[in-house]
Amino acid sequence: MSSSSKNSSSKERNGKTGPLQVTMTSFGYKEGAPPAANMVFDVRFLKNPYWVEELRPLSGRDAAVQQYVFEQPLAEEFLKSLLHMLDALLPKLQELSIPDFSIAFGCTGGRHRSATMVEVTASRLIERYPEFKIAICHRELDGNSLEGQPVHCRPGTAQAQGRDLA
Image (cartoon, one colour):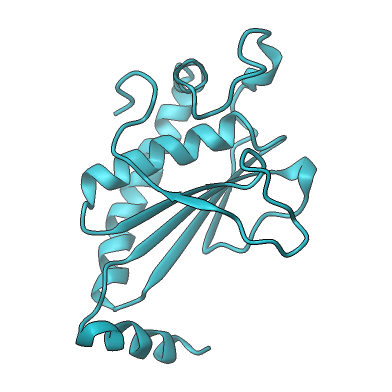
């Protein structure tokens, strides 16, 4: 489908442009190729909570994992840079009536670092852009198959589980 066809179908919904749909997906490289997305970020540069015994059974949905990841200065810097870029990009996509945009974060297993980045980034985007529809997907955490099965997503919320990760 061409870009102009997408724009037309977006405008045809109820005679006006609907809100931008931003889908955020975490995945594990060891489980397969990254999902199709407009932007893909490899967050294996962050220390892996998997190697901390008490964090291993948890996921990036848990406050303790989010805190561990964001205690790393590079995680804070990365998020700040990403949000700066998205602050310029997302309103322009909405203005151009582009209906959807996807961002994927990958780490080794798709359980800790990438899931944390999805949860926290989605929370910040919801705070900044309440008019957008933000969906959160965790390919490995939600048991989604790579064999053509759809990834099940949930609407995002404005609260990350961990400390205030501004």
